[in-house]
Image (tube, rainbow, N blue to C red; front, side, top):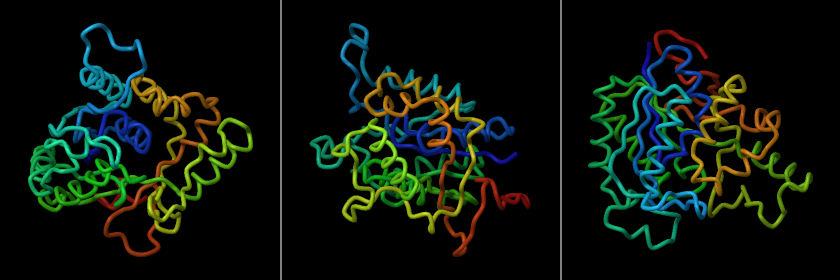
Length: 270
């Protein structure tokens, strides 16, 4: 069975855009490997969550271990870089920040894992990191370079449907769940959000794995500020809102469409 490696920037990122796909792949018998560029050192934990003397970085590693178990992943690895924080913050300038890493050197670290695993499919992010986070953009650069070094056959960029996001946010505002002033402009050309539907090649129906995806997100309890609004959705709303995961298959011809990240391997069709 083909092996899937998912490359992410921080603990919890694996759930939002790829959690259902990872659980689906594991259930189908594929080997699933999670690789993180950083340990999420710059994240923020709710006051009182950490035990006396407990470091956030240790909590985040423990959380990702639990989330990986929920999703059925077989291996978790970290490349050893430091969380860069959000764009424009002082953490961007830390000498060990992932966004400052030499792309070639970081790619070789990841390529070594891809070779060791004989990876068939690598998941990264789209070229603007879904919403412009510097570590997510760097995941794209490093992941694409690593796949070329290792000869990984298939590379898919995890993304979000811009149209679906726009509709979901509009519904959230209309229902009163979200204030209009808190809604980002998904069409802002200076900070693109997701990808237009016309450019998305691969849509994976993960509704049967929605509860697993939700449980994996809940394992990241230190990140309730980011994940809380999604976890607060009623189960049926969560299933529909988060039940399709979107990808851009690199090298696919214009107009290509499939519904399986393993499409094209060993004659498998999407």
